[in-house]
Length: 163
Figure: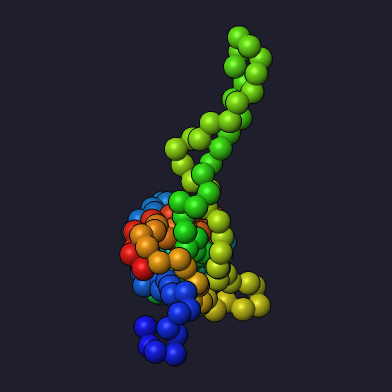
């Protein structure tokens, strides 16, 4: 902390440095074989070992491969940060079958609050990989980072930090 920030609450920023997927759907060899059996031109998208490959066959029967995911960021559609993940408990209402009364119970989990996000649009495919610096209260806390991939699957990582 430099002297000009003395007395101000500290800030935390999160940088996304990697994301891995291990999906497989079909195999390139199977897709090439299936395309080869047809007399028409066509294409097929294959997900193999964390890569998305587009296989195409032209009218002359010539096959081509195009890798659609060149970099780990190509998999990410959206990512967001909750700078104080344990600040909001997940509470549910439970009805007692005998008395008919409703009571609130903590599920043991917390609600992810989307405090910052970066996402792609059709017009703008760029993605910010570092969040803005967010003011936090000093002490121990858990920061949650949620990533949604291009198939809509979400993954969350929780990091414990001391500020």
